Length: 285
Image (cartoon, rainbow, N blue to C red; front, side, top):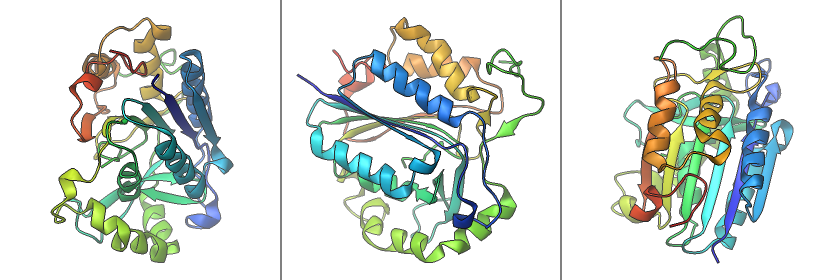
C-alpha cells in the first residue's frame, strides 16, 4: 500500500529583523492558499499532512518536514510540497545559475535557497515521487487569457500585488545573512547542486515534478483571498473532477493565467513515465 504525505507552507509576512530590518513582506492570501491545499489533500485521504503558516514556517521547520518525509517514504510513495509566499534571490556564488542569482523561498526567519531544496530531495529513496508546487515569484526553476477581474481571485484587488522581495530589500536581506547563505552554497550543497559535479544528473533518486506559479524572470500575483495561480489551479481541479494527467493539468492552468505570468512544468531526478501519466495528487496507475 503506497503512502501519500504532504507539506503545505503559507507565509503572509516575514520577520523584518531577518531581512532588512523594516520589510515584513505582508501578503493577504498565502496562509489561505496553504490551508486550501491542505484541505484538498485531506479530502484526498493523505496519510500524513503538515501545515506551516507564517511564524511556524521557518527554515528549520520546512527542512525538518522534508527530512521526515524522506525517512518515511519508499518506492512508489508520493510527497506533495506546496509553497505560497514571496520569492527572493541571493547571489549565486557556486556557479550553478546562468543569471548569477539563486532563487529562494522567503520563509519567516530567512530565505531557503533553491540549492537547499534540491539537496533535500537527494535524501529520498529511489522511486519516491515528489510533486512540488511553488506559488511564488522567480519560481520557474526553484527546485532547481485577459487579465483577471476581481471574481477570478475571489476578492476585490485595487491594484496588482506581486509576491516578490523588492529590489531595495534584496541586497540588504542577503547581506544580513550573507555568512549563512554563502556557507550553504559552498559546503555540502555545492557537491550536489553544481552541474560541474560529474554526479549532478544522478544524485536524486526520487522523481521530482515541479509546477511553478511563473517563470524565473516573472512575478506571481497575489489576490485578496487566494493567489492567482493557486486560484486557477483550484478552478482546473474542480473539487477532484479533473481527470487528466500532469501535462494536461498544467496546460489548462496556463490557459487561465494572465499573459505576464506563465506557470512552468518540469521534471528533476529519476525518470518515471508512470508518474507523468498520473492524475494530480492521486498517485494511482
